[in-house]
Length: 215
Ligand SMILES: [Fe+2]
Ligand SMILES: [Fe+2]
Image (tube, rainbow, N blue to C red; front, side, top):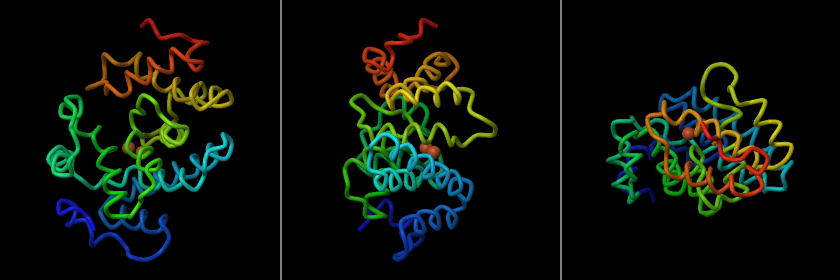
């Protein structure tokens, strides 16, 4: 049963059908057809990346279908809802509420769509920023979301990221995090999870070739 705070969204959750159908229907019925299409793109990428890198592709697909399931929540309501759901809202999230959508999506996946797999909920909950100690599944959904991004045109980091993906999930994740890091002065916030995992990966094999950006 959903937490009371999510009760208004329960009528939009179909009780039957595949998870793909239920997720897409939910997004379309709540005015988020664009996010439904974006999510389908992320699912396709996540499936391929998971199969290629030895990660459970079914878990990757579930994570990808539900990663932006909180899209219908208006930005102005996200902090209050996150707090009502028991999320320990970070200062960066309070300053830029869009970024807390990843964590709200994880709670909605659990409470509205019945996802109990902690690895899947983790991947949903850090799909925007990644986080220190990220699992391969976390990285699959994160990288897939960056390849099938939700903005017009081709992502500026795409070719470098795809080249890095030939090497490892970590290297691909690092490419996007480095892109964020170099742009950090222009960003509303740099989420601490993104900063921490950027440093973590930079100290490991992923960043060994490039090293932390000095810019
Ligand atoms: Fe997202
Ligand atoms: Fe997304």
